[in-house]
Length: 361
Image (tube, one colour):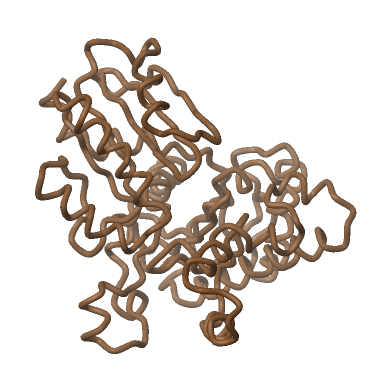
């Protein structure tokens, strides 16, 4: 058996797969207070308590510049993960707590890291580099890494299957609590909205997305906030929550308050702007547009608002199919299909790391 662990800041998701890589069970713990106790409970529950458990695969948010492929976690890799912690200070500690737990309590298990940044390692320098001093950037590993890479790898695989075409060109969107968009050209990521951290890009549930850094400078200069307070605000009290008072898109869509309508307009406008940019930088018109994530998969009104301005480019939504969250929501006349895909990061992690765990089970 192989366990897949996605250890987030306030939740923990686990999945169990058999020795052939087939899913067996899933378990989610929301709003937990003690990660170690949660993991202990998980491993006492059937079927996760199965004595045949031989390996655990971790979703690691940030691999830094050095780690861009799935890897077994030995002492050298563990130190590299610790070094990458500074690049994602609100996400990596939660990931590493889970790694630490298994190192202490189940040292017999093979531990494997799969990185959310890895899919975007193909982004060229023109998209990855910030306009900052090169020596400073290289020393502190300041560049655009991108995230949701495990999800995008799965969306690419699923779109390839649906299109019947190898290495397609896509504009894919992972719209959940965290939200991003990715330009995939001939099967390779060439740009994405998130940057060095998961703060950049689209408006998200509680994150601001693109922001003039002068705003941060002003807040600090005026003595409004220190670095820790800024971090708290930008990650947890911005985005949809700041615009509407709510972070759940379902609640925002059901609200009649003017702030809710404004939040939806700002949220969808930012996505459409990125799509327009990616249509411009891709060498050819995309073979498909792809929606995924909780909002992308279930919020038909949001998809409709995003797709409406794209009709001028020949992308035409089938309103009935969109309303019922069908897997394909463009009309036959549309210049390219539009897919709605239920992403499966756990299966993708198992597939990507098969060469590492197969010898252990």
